[in-house]
Image (cartoon, one colour):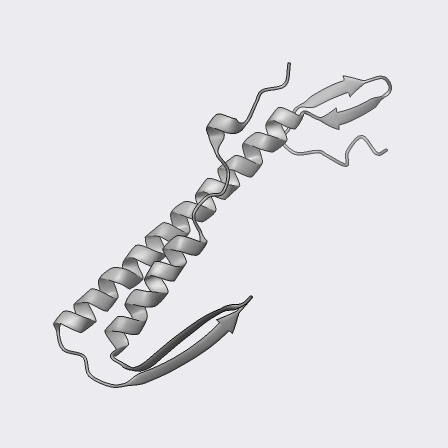
Amino acid sequence: MDKNQFNSPLTKYAKFGDVETPNSDGIVRQVVKGEYLYGALGLILGLAAIIGGCVLGLHGAVGHTSWTASVLGLSSKVNDAAPGVILFIVGIFLVWITKPRVDINKIKPNP
């Protein structure tokens, strides 16, 4: 194994015999940070879409939009909706789909 394979300033090395491998605590830390950054960005974009949908709805933006979607057995059908309603639904979907799945309290440190 090449010693420079895991050459990253964010990982520390643990020695096991003659082979150096990245410390698993550092990898878990990076994964959790990435997961929560992804969740925070999804929350910000989702809330912006929700607020934008509310603003469009309250200001009376008119038009009609039809939407039919089916993914993994789930289906959604919206007929003759205003653009604000569609933007609101997309915002709720963004917030729901990007929430972090990692529970920090369930991660156990290495002994």
